[in-house]
Image (tube, rainbow, N blue to C red; front, side, top):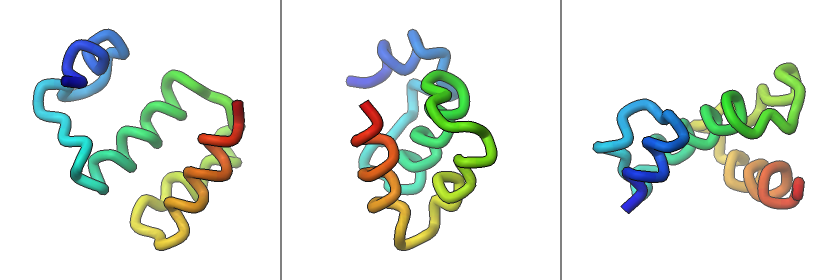
Length: 68
């Protein structure tokens, strides 16, 4: 389903992306912020890069979903 969109974004490995894999999803979000969105300064993305943190979902919600 996401293959065409991920290909258009020049994402790595769009054919095998599994949005239900939490680690893969979090890595994609970090890549997307780093490469495409670039809303935050590099030094302000540190917490986002800590994909194994239990606080990551809250950070994702507050920083990325509410930054519009």
